[in-house]
Length: 255
Image 1 (cartoon, rainbow, N blue to C red):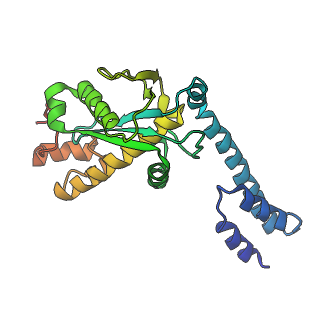
Image 2: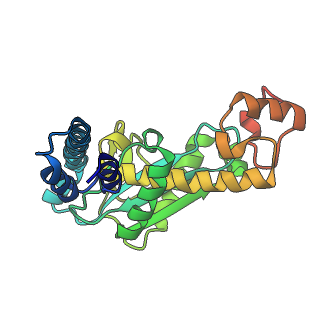
Image 3: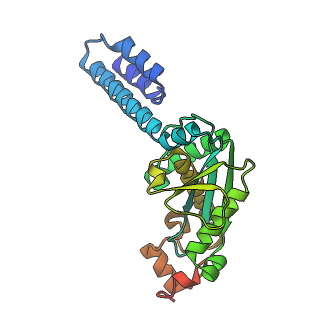
């Protein structure tokens, strides 16, 4: 088989499959051609990266394992997206993953590339025991401030769960007026798989909303800045004026 054909075969491998990587390496490990050796070496590096990710993902379940061991059955991760933008709502998500469900590449949504976020979103929605979304509008944010609006959205997400959680793993905050045990975890979206899953679902949900707003309100580049204060966005506010989805309390310096 030619080197080009072998490279094409390597490119078709599922790099998240130990079995496929092992099979490929065993098939070509004795090929003495330098080009093939390079391809096999690439496969070896992919396998090492996969093993590291499996370990990291296992570590991301440490809080979940702790509370399962204490007798909690339905462990819910909660996170928000959109506290800082000049426009659009704040969106939260509450997710209960199945016990011992190890989903690779879960992390703080800001650290996950968009294509992978979209992929993970589908997996999380498919596998979750239950998930709930909370959305609080820019008008409400202006009315009660962003912190209280975030708490409100989190309570909304919890209420939209079909399965009531036994315990909440929160990204750093303690949510007022919730009668469920809460565990605030600093940088929780990088330490807990449940919180990371919530972060990704909230991020994808809000991004899709902002992409739709970009079609409704062209000129502000919402599809790219997601409502955050990019230079292009701020210039558009100054020249075109604010839209109905802008947070009035956030854009005082620009209008």
